[in-house]
Length: 355
Image 1 (cartoon, rainbow, N blue to C red):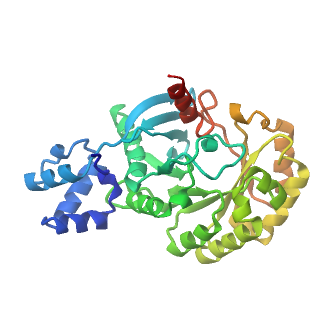
Image 2 (tube, rainbow, N blue to C red):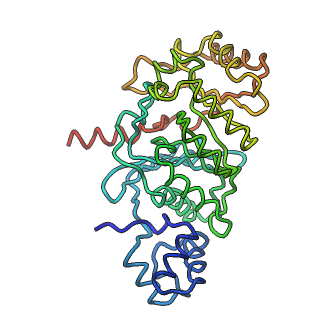
Image 3 (tube, one colour):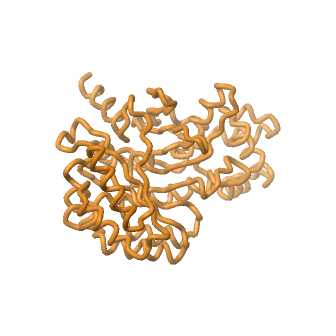
């Protein structure tokens, strides 16, 4: 029987669990330090923790539940990891190098049911949610890989934008955020963490109420219901009016900027008229809005969709700027490997089917 990841416990949960099993409160701080600061790979390496505590931890938890299946490295230093879970499922995690630090993009579900028509992640439907521990362990495995290089590099930023819809796995995502923010552990600042949603309006309200100080990104990709429903079926459940109402609530509650993700697809959503509609949609929320324009990474299975031309991207950007919208075109990374999220996993699953 597979044991759950020890990384799935928040500090409070670990403390409560150890107390319940007859151990002193201070043991939790010791174990936490070994896990996140010293980054051990075995409970037996915790040499200031007594044997009784080690034994009960080993009996109930695992430190390593993910194994590296494939690793790809781009010329620009971007690294994509394909991890195998204990049940055999595969997930993707990406390390990106920026001027401001090292960022890791984590996955929250095995597959995705949101069904965006242009996306590689949705090629394989959702199998299950990841546990909070499996999400945390993605970061730990990347950090352990960096540790082996001996350059004292540290993961400093997190984006929750990998395979799956984080708000469809809400509680595990929230627990994950609490674990990685803990100042005695990984100590990744809330303002260095971004969670992306395809637009689950009901969960945006819940997220706003938590006041986590974590950045919110919304995958918008279209400025009107007709187009958005055509390329993102989630819009049927949460049309743009409901989505924008939830964002309005978030802005009022947190006074934090929202990023709108907008993948530019040739002759689909990249016309000047769409840019004008997008500017109108954002309206008087300009000061708390940022539009991240993303050149589309073509996916074999979605051959009808192609990347916008440089001229179309430039015109879209200029149109937004003239309307006073803060925006930018995302710098591409990992273009020489399986760039689109979900591509590497999809290719590996196809190989398995052929065997």
